[in-house]
Length: 179
Image 1 (cartoon, helix red, strand yellow):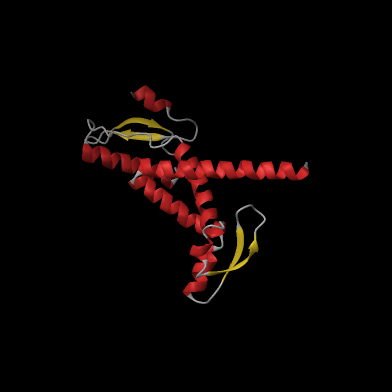
Image 2: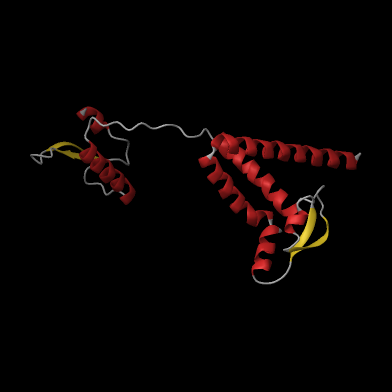
């Protein structure tokens, strides 16, 4: 163990291990080198946990994600944000807060501007900006995923499939326009 500790973690690491009863230094490696606070905090936290829980304690951990759910929720957030803020079919829900300006450049989307004043205007500004509303949609999807992972994963998957389909439709329209 002493040889393993002495080997250290490279040129930027160091340690001092003292016997708690005698104060004798059991092992030291670059002990006089100053360390950033974060490293010291990790050591103090680990020491406190060891003192409180004991050396026989184990803490089970699990891998929560492989990154796939983040990608799914990201694409779902994108699509749901565009549905809420730009989709022609959802215009009725935005109507109390927005004024129709005309068709947008993208198929099935409309351009609108916020109207009114006070809270009506604030909500209108949120409802015409997919970038603005995406933080709320993303937070909502994440909260839903934490509460009901299977249902939210399915909903995000559906939104992602539709977003992918939209991309293919737009790509086809672009190719068709050039032909």
